[in-house]
Amino acid sequence: MPHVSDPKARPSLTSGQTPAPAGTRTATAQPAPSPEQQAMIKRLSQTMGQHATACTAAFIARKHADIIRESAAFMHSLEAVWTEEGVDPTDVWTELLRRIEVGDLFLRLNQPPHRKKLNGKAVRPWRISTSKLP
Image (cartoon, rainbow, N blue to C red):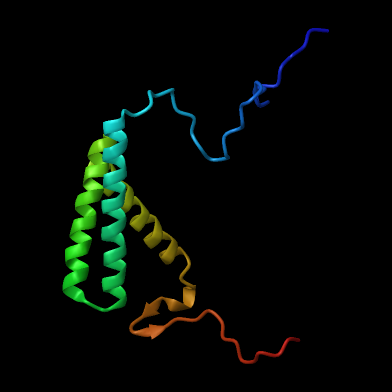
């Protein structure tokens, strides 16, 4: 009887390889970043972290003007990351819009029927008169 392989089976790993964590995508091999790119990535990461931290501190201190200024600086750094990685900003804004729309849909679907109003009065198909179990 010929050996039939399972299409869902994982490929075997050669020695020294570790399996990828669940939910991660395997990408094609990319060359290691040059020292200049590594320095730029480090600098950009530090700048983003500083602005995110400053924005959070301004929020805690309730400083409205500082929140605006640091949020703008963080978004500017974020845009630089998108540019570096070749991400189209419209893709990010589309994803944000999708998340908002899905959240709104879930909120509407989870509203109990008695929340709907007819002529300004709540319509209830039933009314609980006691908390006692039968």
